Image (cartoon, rainbow, N blue to C red; front, side, top):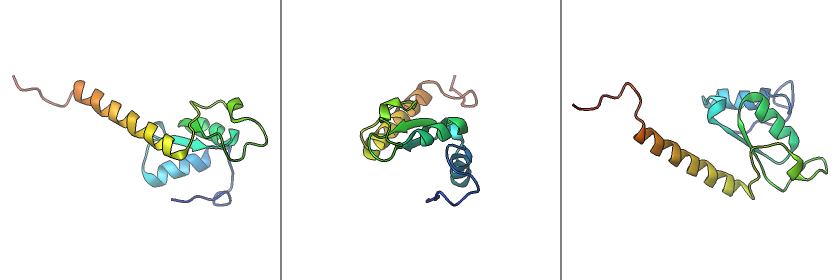
Length: 107
């Protein structure tokens, strides 16, 4: 899905762009990660309730990406995807070890 900077009446760092993407993809913000190249991306993601990652390339108003308060810096979008897949695998393993209360265990 593509949501351009002029698709909504407000722009990042307002959380509306992030919330709109989550809504259109039917994903809860707490289940999503915002990956961006600027402080505005991280601010919008945090304000929307998403985890945030930044990449060390792109546009950040001339400031080093290390100054951005995100949950981490990843070297590329490919690395961000790998981190997401690893987190999903950990969550699935935890779910298997801690089944939901509605799941019945045979006597």
